[in-house]
Image 1 (cartoon, rainbow, N blue to C red):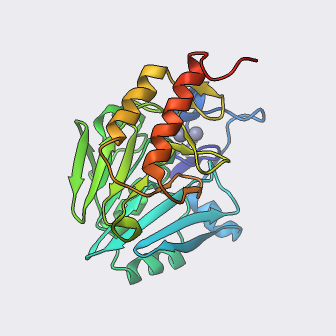
Image 2 (image 1 turned 90 degrees about the vertical axis):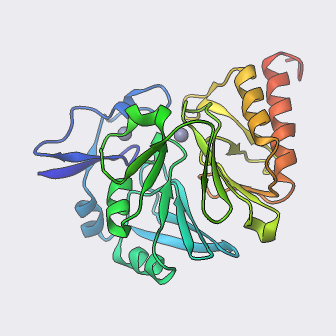
Length: 274
Ligand SMILES: [Zn+2]
Ligand SMILES: [Zn+2]
């Protein structure tokens, strides 16, 4: 019996004697199955390969990024907020080695794990077991949890308040339960928004974007983007970090509103003529 991991999205499945027939997360239009076909691996194989390690970077006071190198699966970055004795992991990674465990334990362990959306569920259950932490996932994405666990706590409604000035907000969009994390004390009290793929930092990092599918370039409806911008509007934050280690460095709250406005005008044919 092994826990198989989809090599494309990095999501782990419950123990089975043979690999699952397919990965529902990758079969769906927001992801893809590579032309070479569905491939599976296991965490033991990743560790034994000796190919991987996690790079941990201090981004600012109380905030660390964790990224697996070389890239595995979608290649996301997870974030660890460490403050006032309450440590939270935002989004998750497939790869977890002893060095990473020791670093996190040196920061007091993990009190909670919260996920933006199913593309980063990765090995959340094993991380939760390692650190004995609850995993907060929005109820609207329950169907995408491939590996059930007593550690997973589904939340509902539009927001969930956690200790340390941290609040999860459901914005929807990319996924129905798509969530962002607002950290009031981040950036020396100016506020930080961690967004996963729910709000995406683009190449021009003064701007963000919003998509239903990033790999397949399917946009969101204008009214949905409007709703997302309205939900973020009351939040104060100067910095915004996405899932790919990209950052809106200043006046990020304004950048979200400006970007939503541009996106809606583009969809409605009011931004450019080509
Ligand atoms: Zn997959
Ligand atoms: Zn995604």
